[in-house]
Amino acid sequence: MKPGKHAGGKAGSKEKHWKLRLYVAGHTSKSLAAIANLQIFCDEYLSGDYQIEVVDLLKHPQLAAGDQILAIPTLVRKLPTPVKKIIGDLSKTEQVLVGLDLRQEEQTV
Image: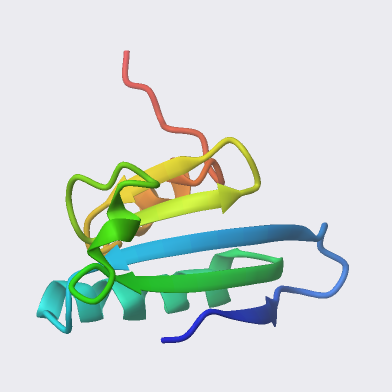
């Protein structure tokens, strides 16, 4: 997937610009799942403009240092600030929502 801009969202919703970078390693099943899950997630939950950049660390390993990537796949939310990171294939929607500050984490007492 090449970097690009995608306009998604619902009419009348408050617009935000989202800049997401997904670090993967080649075309493994986890990498492909993370890419597919991210696209589905963005289409369903992010209103406004968003940009997804997929970085293959097998082709560009030097890029891992800039975002301090220690595990893959890793999603980095660059915008809106603050920067957030989520490690994994993004298959657990609730964890992605909490990780991107779209939903508050439920606390058990």
